[in-house]
Length: 145
Image 1 (cartoon, rainbow, N blue to C red):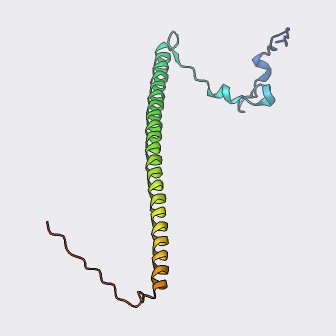
Image 2 (cartoon, rainbow, N blue to C red):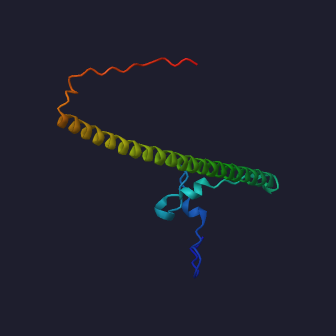
């Protein structure tokens, strides 16, 4: 068979030109450096008596639709989880702000009490009071209800 070449089309080559001698492996046409493209190896065609199997196409369509449904449900589930995490983060941030505000409030109270204590110690020292040597007893009573 002759090599035919037209503008805009691929060259047609007869199969006899690539046949291998008996006993050897089937020779492949030298397209793309003699290698078959991986995409050509992955194509699946189901032959049933009477042509292409329409039931196989329907099954494949059903499988693809089921996979789309699973992906859609997974996206919805992920979206709900994301929103719940966002709400929980905002709640935690609010709690943290309250705790931080309380901490600053306690620090201010502590600083003021320390200032008052230092002032009282200076006043007592100026009076000559021996408050450091005195015993300080705190009576703790149990509360009975």
